[in-house]
Length: 286
Image 1: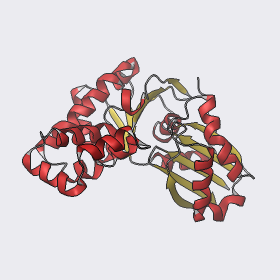
Image 2: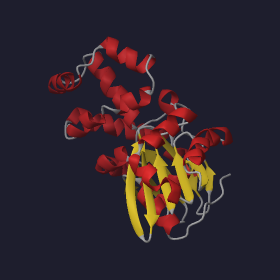
Image 3: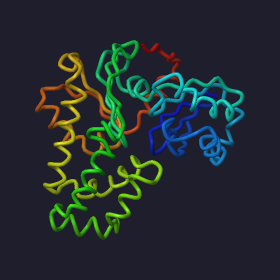
């Protein structure tokens, strides 16, 4: 049985195929920057769904945020191999998973806009350039953590429009002390910041939110997409919840930069399943 997974910092989507049938599972996200061997193995064992198919799995294709070097790949591969003991386990960066899921084997710029953000140029066979993915402190432009930070700081500075200010306060009851504790003292501050996504999604028609999203997407284009000369000649594809929910604004900003937008999907795991379940092979990465 083949098992395919796409993992961000917030959650992991899994799809298994057996006798032509596909089954979808979900666990927390696994990121080598934040999670150790014991955490990953414990969470895998806590999933009754994965435990039920554990011995039947013969191949695992896992694409994860932060799995961008041999050391970090091993960090996630070891607990996966320990859990799926009958399987060959392959772990790669989520950017390769994104490219395989949306580029359909053709050249394109592949982008992730979820909890974090990242982008690469895929030449049709392999990832040719990766120069971003700096994380929520230095990068993640246009992502859930980026917009969460903007919303949270605007609220704490008391510069949100009156209606939004009251709604945010009623929804989250956050104070300066709570925010500082969560961001500077607790684990996974990026997922904490991204947890405010339902708020700006709920108020997506508010002028303040619209302008905030536009600014974030413009910054993403300026710092990420436009750094690839190929972005002017090939489609630019997107995966991730932020790209999907705000795809109309994304299209508008793409037009501003005269960029041809390609596929926009919420979950790359579906494209990955279609690729590997039909016999697709793991390409090289340089």
